[in-house]
Image 1 (tube, helix red, strand yellow):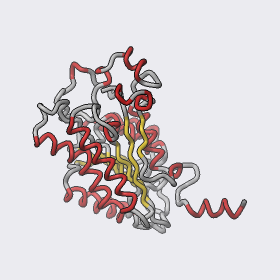
Image 2 (cartoon, helix red, strand yellow; image 1 turned 120 degrees about the vertical axis):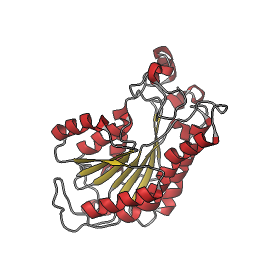
Image 3 (spheres, one colour; image 1 turned 30 degrees about the vertical axis):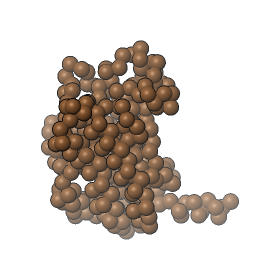
Image 4 (tube, helix red, strand yellow; image 1 turned 30 degrees about the horizontal axis):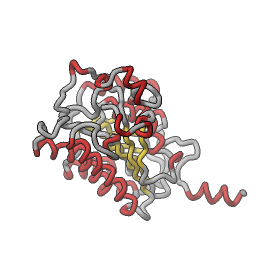
Length: 303
């Protein structure tokens, strides 16, 4: 028994308590509610640094940074402007991370884009933007993050929550949607590009063999991101998820197993799980976070 325990401990380089001490993380879509929830969860797990990436830095980070300075004072949050579909900017970000911290451990792609709800309203340019946000960004993470995640760090860095890294490992997490598995959740651009995002994850398992890096997908269903129909852009060119208010409370109770929309932090906790040692034998998975709606009746998935 003792031998088995030792082998299991040696097999996984992660901490048994799931903490992320020393971890340097990237979170894209960081100005969106789900992205901020993910940062909150990674910080709660003890991450040393989180690069909060979005198209432009703004004051939307201020409240979160202020909160985390109290709840997770040893986690450094670095707002970072990033165009997720830019290969050059992705490579520059990775270089800056390695120059500053010498390691990279977690990359969360949460920069999704809804796009228009109908095919008539969808232009080729709209479709291109959906693919850039929903599947090109994960592709760049898969292509360029693993070599950086393979960098070892045999001495502790000179920053809070620093730890050594004596073995190559890392986690790529793609936040997609239940639209990654079937149609009818929103417009065609959203469904097509979310399917492609899951394709990146599934193709990534073979690509990552021998690297110690895992890749997984989170597919949220109806998530209450605090937006109602009165201030929602129905073309979907600024939103990651549709507003929960599109479905009445009565229909939520009827169509969702848990009878309510999910919360951003409930997606964030799944990302924290996939980043940590608690998921050390999970790769290529698609974790559906929809309150049971899709298994009750896929044709009534809330939009």
